[in-house]
Amino acid sequence: MKNLVEVKNIKKNYGKNEAVKGISFNIKEDEILGLLGPNGSGKTTTIGMLLGLLKPTSGEIFINGQKLEGNRIEILEQINFISPYIELPKKLTVKQNLYVYSKLYKVQNIEERIEYLSEKLRIGELLDNVTGELSSGQKNRVSLAKALINEPRVLLLDEPTASLDPEVGDFVRTYLEEYKREKKINSRLRIINIASRAAFRGEQQEYISYACSKGGIISLTKTMSRSFGETDNIVAISIAPGFVRTDMAQSFIDKHGEDVVGQGITLDRLTEPKDISPLVSLIVSGKMDHSTGSTIDVNGGSFLR
Image (cartoon, rainbow, N blue to C red; front, side, top):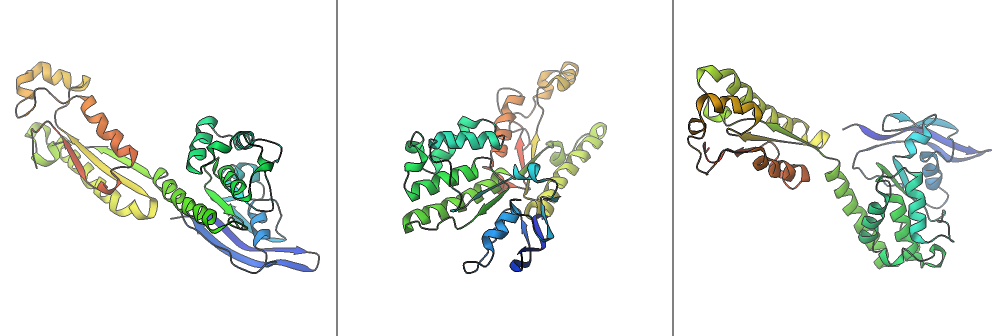
């Protein structure tokens, strides 16, 4: 899996004072990295450089393969952050703040995104409140909503639980773990290959190439699942229909008759595209991810393995 963040020997000097002394690290997709150190060790300065707010004295930063210097505006759409040293505008309501930041980050479906985060972070009842009048715990949850408003690929957290009581701190940590899991599931690539029952039962000589090609698709599905599942977050599943009533199949039905085509089907009609679409929707939803590499039959009982 490629690096999402690459930091190469960055330094930051203020006159003769060396705030950051040549730090290097990489972060992969879905990986969490913590920076530990006492006050004044350069943690916040490093985050400032990752955000492009501070320019390194030397060294380079790459986000998703792009150099931060020279591409900051484009890259910042993929990043967000929380910091106890930067407060949201105090005179705006919570909803106004979230709306403004949504516009800045070019978020689509702003109302839906605000509603979703309000429910997840329990700030729905705070939306019409003035931000400056909130408690520290409430402000923290609103800041977290702001940080997640654009579904960032890189989320930078500068002391996200500082000055919070243990209950609120636990809530923030638990939600961030949940967000990480959801983000991984939602970013997963799901590949659906359409094979055929012919791959398993074989075919007559006239259609031997068709049967062999569908068998190859099933083998490809298993190979993709095994080879790229862990490294590239890919799920691959095959669907093996029997005879399906489509425009392409209609000429065959007209030539041979529906009785011949329907031989062996245990149900009262041929399979139609609408019988396969719910399965496709289920696979795309992610609820069948643990079936990766498998092949699912949809043939009206005409061929049972």
